[in-house]
Length: 179
Ligand SMILES: [Zn+2]
Image (cartoon, rainbow, N blue to C red):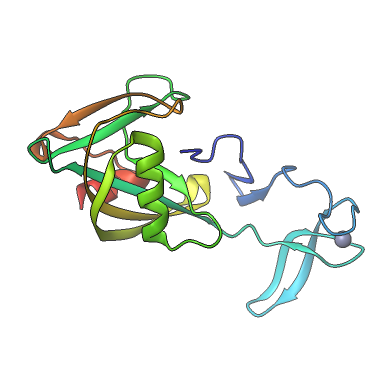
C-alpha cells in the first residue's frame, strides 16, 4: 500500500506550494540544494535546484494505483480495507505505487493480489484523480476479483459492503469510489 507515508516532499502553506527539506542534497553531485529561480517554458520559476550542476527537483506528482474491489464470489460486495498505519476506523481502497516495467493494469492486479490474495478477473478504468495534498495522481480501477482473502501485514482488517452502503469521502480515492 505505502500510500505516501514518510514521503512528504512538499506542503501547502499560505504562499502556495512550499519547498521542504525532504531533498537536501543533489542526488547527482551531493551539493546542498537551494531555492533558485530559473527560466522555464512558462517563465521564471522558483524550484529546489542544484547550484553546482543544475539538477532540478521537479516535484512531479507520483502515480498511485487504486482498486474498487468487487468480490464476484461474495454477492458483488465491495472490499474496503483499513491500513495498519491509519488511526481511527477509516476503510479505504486498496492502493499502491506503480513499479517500473509494468502497466497500470498489471500494477493494480499485482497490488490486489499482494494486499488481499484475491485474484483479479477483470479490470475497468474508473478514472484519474488528483490528490494534491499528497502530490499524487490516482489511477483508479474497478477490479472484479475472487478467491480466499488473506491480508498483507500492511492492512489491519477489511470489511465487505453492499455497493449502496458505502459512504464516499470527499477526497482522492473517495471520488473514485463514488464514480
Ligand atoms: Zn548537483
